[in-house]
Length: 71
Image 1 (cartoon, rainbow, N blue to C red):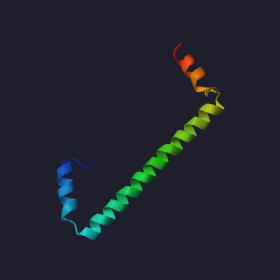
Image 2: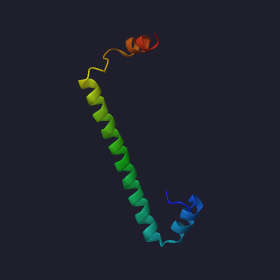
Image 3: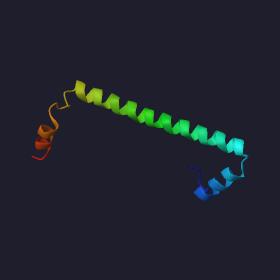
Image 4: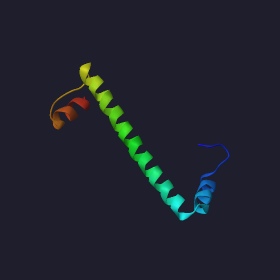
């Protein structure tokens, strides 16, 4: 985040924008959040595939896995 700019100041600046620009900003932020979630999910899948390829993934029923974890 920018140094010296508080969250309240950012909100104040945004509120000073015309309604159309505020709406555009909301849409841009919404899209970026969606993209960030998608990227995190893709990274998780990529990591899981690597772990699976290395044999680090266990298979079984939930109760079996829970028993194994509680040992």
